[in-house]
Length: 404
Ligand code: F3S
Image (cartoon, rainbow, N blue to C red; front, top):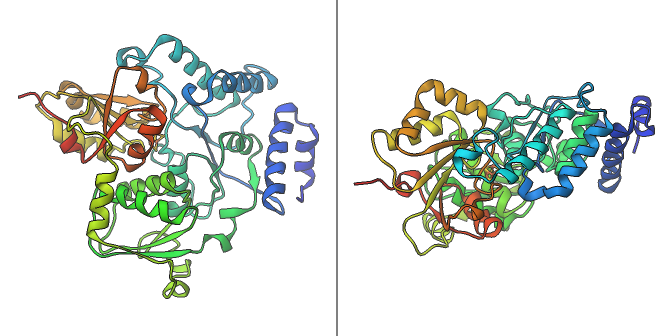
């Protein structure tokens, strides 16, 4: 792979060990995937944050990296970078019932990232909190739902990075030029046409169904109706969880649909036609619990926007919730929710706005819950495998139960 003079210095260790190690990761990746050169990025989003998933080995790796840079020295990262959700609410872990041992380790992980210069904003919807690339920007993001959103809805360019490669890219300000960074790989690979209009959590069910079929393909959706950004957020998260979709197009809606090569696919035998009963069947398959009430209703996968929090506040206003309720979001969106009065409404009804974490990367299996209610197909897909718990997939208004 071609390196310019500055990149060669980074690779040789002129700028220290942390930069050298990071360049080694990027060059190795570039060689594996046949990249001809590196490309400058404008932002990074880094997974591998929850203590539940990276454990002590991950914590030590990050602390070594931060120490190699010299603690309290200038941040080493070259571009604005944010973190994926952590395993706890970093501030309110005690109120929510997280163990102190887990929370201590979790805060150490986030502190190590902070020492490297990465913002301690832990969210899978960084595009809602200021980490917003422009159309055609090259970035290095690793959370799969955020990758699908930033490629498809914003039209920036990223591969599905792993945590270490996104971190290396953040430190070097570069990523290898292959995959979805190249225009030729951004064409659609099949058409997905819907028979009926859909709304709300139907998008998650659709994404789950299509992701299973298309793997790492690039679906081009032809909807009967316009979709909101929240619906596209759910669609991409589900596509990326049952499959490995990193990019999709929506006719008349997403920024690159016009150049996606639809006409060449019209006769393609892989095209999919989705009926109303396909959606209904997928809906049913996403629930694996025989119970009709969840102990914990956990909303906000991907992390909730202010509009989604308002919708939940509207459901619970002046009522008392029977189940536990978590609404997962970023600390930034919660601040806006506090100011709008939505947090107070939800807390008065007995629910919580939970920051920095989510139902999949938090250790909810150790917190006494058995059945989790979710309105996200991605969460319904992961909670049984990642947490070993039963799940009910439904609309928020059906999942939340009230005291008489
Ligand atoms: Fe985000 Fe957790 Fe869902 S990281 S996409 S809320 S599984």
